Length: 126
Image (cartoon, rainbow, N blue to C red; front, side):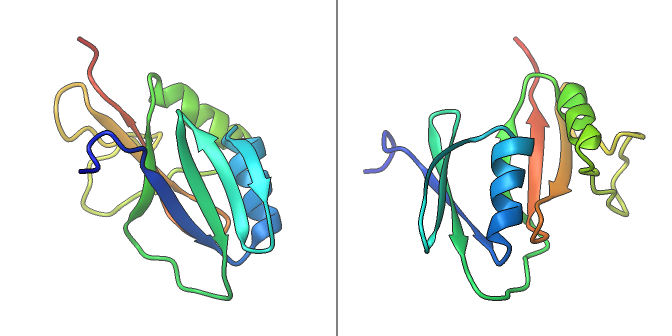
């Protein structure tokens, strides 16, 4: 039924001003609209809605992620903007925070201003 439908992701924020700057200026997503309820961004042809909420406790698991061609460059760009990769106990991550669970697969995590966990994944090339 939904196989060909576009997915719309949702992330909560209690810090809309910081989130606008983070998703638009740091991550480079295109801001489509902003209202009293939240913001809508475009990323790779998909919509990400950042909903304005009262205070909340972010989950410890990944809320959203992106497949990227060069994870090292993305992490360097994030670091230049003050965003640090998350270092997880029990995962063998390199000095940049990248975990390689399988040959050619590289994954790293970081947080938005509300503490939502986001990820980057570089998949093997054919």
